Every structure is written in structure tokens, then in C-alpha cells.
Image 1 (cartoon, rainbow, N blue to C red):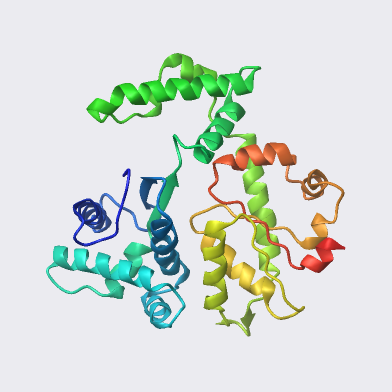
Image 2 (image 1 turned 60 degrees about the vertical axis):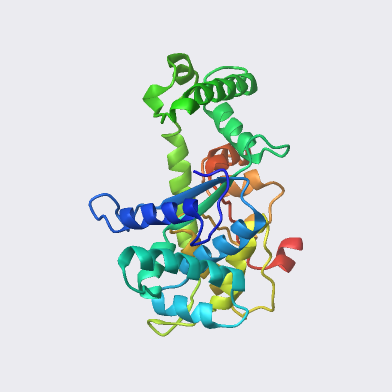
Length: 315
């Protein structure tokens, strides 16, 4: 967690962070590559960091192997020059640790497990604070949910402020008893809703054929990477085109990549042809209305809704 972060091999903070990540990455007893992730949390990350460094990390996650990652970086204009520069800076740091020149074979599995998160606390927009308060309001047992969420948030700020001089770390059991009693863990029905959504989406995605024959997959890595980058900066991305030109296949590839680390769900366009989204959820037997589903997903970093045909939706 850093107030600011610059990706430079000459920056001591960056150098130390990457060194620590790399050492843990290679400690198989501490870090499980199939399920663990590294997260770099910054306070209001700059556009350069969020766009170009995140773009490099997204490019690594979108590649199926190190060879494809190298090809993506070599295509002019496929990814920004700044993103490639960031790869070079990290390569310099890791090479110094290893005592040899490392390449994309070494870096690709590392970069794809690294994520950047920007928190906008103490700002006028305060979207992170709003998200946390939504979660607190949803999990409270008190009748005045908004008031309870505000009280809990203020208690957390006070607790963190008192622990900051000692650089304390907190677990749930370290929180005051009145704060714990005010909220209950999310689980049970909520998890069943998410599982139903996942099963529903799997059924839809399995119906989208993206291979020729048994295993020949015609991937559109440029389009897929472009959509993923757009989703980092906007809430809605429309994929349009004539019928049969592969929109659904591209969308399926995007979901496959995002679904490895984040929750993504899908609906067919005809399912959305209802007077209200609640009716769509009811007919799909999801077990929650739109308001409840929004609260459950409040803690998810990205909500993804796939539409096969905008024209049919508008009709």
C-alpha cells in the first residue's frame, strides 16, 4: 500500500516493492500461483499508472502464454510505448535480483498475477467510501441501515487513525465488539445467488461456439485486449457489428479472461426484453431482485453485462 507509486528501476519504493513481490512469487510454500494474487494499492493512482501500468498487466493476463505476451508487445500500437517502458523497468529490477538478464518467459507469469487498485479516500468523489458504506448498510442488523453504516465507517476511521503511528494491522477479531455485533458476514442466500448467476452464465457461454472443429480457436487478441482496456476506464462498452461476424465469440473470450480473477455474468438479449430487470432475474430463477443483486455485487470490482445485439435490445 503506497500513497504514490512510480514504476522506475531507480525509484527506491518501486524497487523494494517489486523485489518483495518477486521473492514471495518464488516462495512456493508462501505463494500459490494458481490461487494467490499480488495487489498494489495506491491513493488516487495517476492516469499514467492506472492506464499504462494496468494496461501492461491486463496484456499479460490476456495472453495465453509468454510467447503470445511477447508477440503482443512487439506489434506496433497494440499497447502503449509507456506500458512497454514499464515492462523494461520491471525487467531491470528483477534482473538485478536474479543476477542475470530475465526475459518474458520469467516475467509473464509474474505480471499476470499483479493487480493495481486505486483508492480515492478523502476526495470529493469518494467512490471507494461510497462502496464500503453500501456494503456496511447491506450487512447491518439495525433498522436505520444508512445511519449504522455511517457509524461503523467513523469507528473504522478512528480505529485506523489510532493504529497508524504504530503501523498496526487489523483482522476482524481485532475490531470492537459493538462494531462486530452491528454487522453480519455476507453468505448463505447471497452465495446461492452468485452461484446461480454463475451457472446461468456458464450455460449461455457454453452455447457460444468459438472453435472450428474440435480445438481450433480463432482468437481476436487485438479486439479482446481493446475491450478489456476499455472496461478499465468506463462502465459500459458496446460491441457492435453485423450478425455473424463474431461479436459473441469475442465477448466469450473477454469473459474467460476476466472470470479468472473477477465475477462476470451474462444474459442473452431476449432475456432483457422485459419491462424491468427484476422480471429478467425472476424468469432466470436467480433468487434476487435488482436492488438485492446490486448490493451483493457492491464489493465486486467490475460488473459485466453482455448483450449480443444492441439493435434487438433497442427494439
